[in-house]
Image (tube, rainbow, N blue to C red; front, side, top):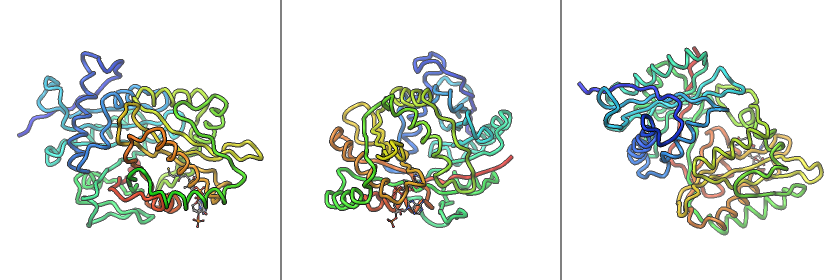
Length: 364
Ligand SMILES: CC(C)(COP(=O)(O)OP(=O)(O)OC[C@H]1O[C@@H](n2cnc3c(N)ncnc32)[C@H](O)[C@@H]1OP(=O)(O)O)[C@@H](O)C(=O)NCCC(=O)NCCS
């Protein structure tokens, strides 16, 4: 009988906290083992500083963190599994998103099951009635048998975390495809796409910067940012508009700095109105050299879609990243399998599939 126990991690003031600081380094080590087994690299591992900064940033999203540790006490300062939940606080307050991660050598033991049950009970006590569970999978896992979402996304079900979701009554809501683009992007493809995008997007201009959003754009950015959840495909879920204002934009910028990262942001302005109608964001570690970046949100307001702004913004932002940060060798992104418009742009840019993640729903 393998012995392990669960810990609830309380609010932690500093990554050097003598009692709890070790948790974030232990999670990073665990993520490394999972990532190497799943992807054959550690590109997606979030370092301890990043984990701590996310956990500590609870003004806009509450966090619940449970750790499975070997033995009966934290003497080894090791984790064999964790469950992490994000709780929206300004809107969508009945929902909680969570993930259960277990060390590859511990997935046969009931650690995942106990973490999930403990997290569900905790979220129920907090009044969260719509639970969204993520189940990541790597390229090698991406094979039959599949569970198919209502819009046709395919989640492989031979992987332990999908079995866990199914055995606890979760329904597959959507599947996010993960893909990776090796840099620099192919020059001929870049030129062809950029020429087309520039011709089709007359009437708009792009602004771009590295780091914090300049004060004069913060309020317009906030208004746009709050709509993302409503506009992006969300499977069986319906999200209310999120509440963003200038202060939240500043907190967002601060959180990125605290994580040891920096954002490359490009926005599209409609020239005639001065309105901000779309943006895209890539984030990379501040430390140089760092080979891996993440392509985060891209969005264009519905009334301005179809003008190639999605392409224009992504290409422009990428060229700035390549100019400033030639150390970044690849960027990863996630898109709903049903998001044909975004996936079409990504495939044309040269992104190739690299696993994904199922989003499962259970209503209590
Ligand atoms: C994905 C998105 C950024 C694309 O922006 P865009 O400026 O319309 O991009 P493009 O003009 O380059 O469009 C690509 C294609 O999709 C089509 N398209 C985009 N949005 C469309 C819509 N709402 N209805 C119909 N067609 C649309 C375009 O007409 C174009 O088709 P074509 O290649 O046949 O001409 C935009 O649709 C969007 O913001 N969606 C909601 C947010 C989201 O899902 N973001 C991605 C997740 S991070």
